Length: 485
Image 1: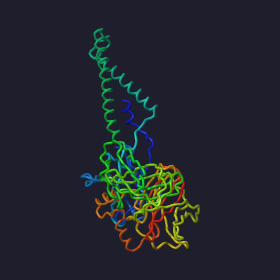
Image 2: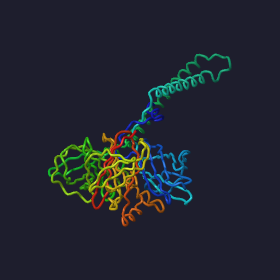
Image 3: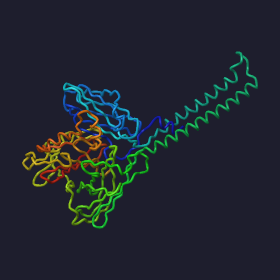
Image 4: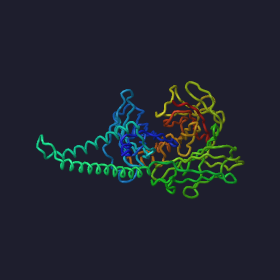
């Protein structure tokens, strides 16, 4: 009964946010450009919070609906819910959606306005992230109510057996009292048995639910002689199918994207791509690195579109001369330069160029979706004209809190992995998977000097942002710091 009561009133227990706990996505829903933020439920079944912001003023209505990402259920959408338009901001809409099962979901967003109807679909992992608790005072109150109800039931049954067949004013005989006492005892035993069986049933259901609670993959890291890094990933014993390691999908051409960040100062960063040699095992020859302690964050994507981030801390000896970096590998070094002008923060790049964070004057708040804009320019402030596509995107960014408890690898399309985005958008007529059609066009014409990333900080704290772009055939890294309230 105690566990049954716990299921009625829940409060969250904190969990880590390695990877992005919320999903951020910017893309086209037909003719409309939308920024979507989805906060999945932490218990399943649970309610996901959806926020939609339109970049234009000609959207009149937004509807949202949850669907499985794969399988027959992905093809038959129920009637979508109407998102509520903000009274203060006509471009901003909010909605709440139930997600009933564990696994890969999508939220289909339908925008309607002056230019007709448009749809997009955003992949969302539905995972139970934590257990639930209840206030002790509330539990004691409910327990008292249960005892009161049991006493009442026993009393009513006893009174019925003892007096129901007597004429008014007639006192019950001794045999009636005896029969009533026996029936009351039997009733109490039956009620206690019902409570016991109910508790056994709930314990069984609670154990089944506990096996669904998400636990991050376990990753171990060692450096072999010769500077060869060995990574071993394994599931943590839960029965969800996505925990296997033989179903990984390439994301931007690689099965793993790994950030190596020096600790504690975070003055050095590498974006590397180990190769899988067998399921759950990755290896690579490290590039030149100074000896020190490093944090590793390794992103993978399972066959059903659910991403995971393995983490490890490792002492790396001096790697010299080191292996030549791969064509998509990148490195950055240095600390942010405390230079701000006109609400812009500047990070120096090679050849006198610089990356400018167009951050604006407003302070950053946790749990709020933002569009982070970065511009590459020369020493005279002229926009760079030699930017290139880097692994299919104008750029890549990593948001890291200074205690390494928050890490997110974000693209200009958002925090959702591209394989999941492709799965979701393939089901929407005319869907452009994260703007990739436009990306191919830009690849042939040249990229603009500005790149943006949709993201929202999950928790307050001090953060470092690593932004990587490709310029003149070389990947360069801008480094920025910020405080989040």
